[in-house]
Image 1 (cartoon, rainbow, N blue to C red):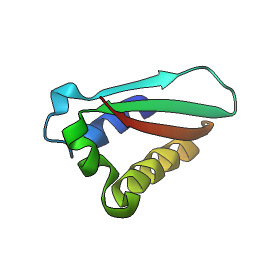
Image 2 (image 1 turned 90 degrees about the vertical axis):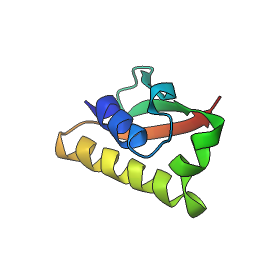
Image 3 (image 1 turned 90 degrees about the horizontal axis):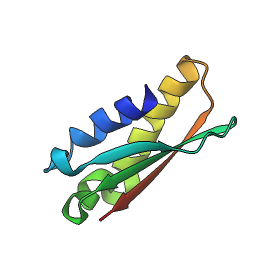
Image 4 (image 1 turned 120 degrees about the vertical axis):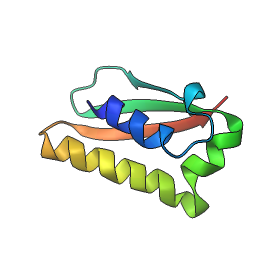
Length: 80
């Protein structure tokens, strides 16, 4: 559920949504880690000025996690 939400948010702001990869890493009881991979050209769009877009994505996903009584979420954003 959180992976799908993250994928939807990221794909809606990048130029090439077909090249976005979002997956959950590991099974830790305390933290859910989500890996986001985007093209190098789209990295600026996802991070935003001063990291504002990335922080907004993290806030929305964390709020959804909290609302559904799930563990804390950590989102790693990287490019290829």
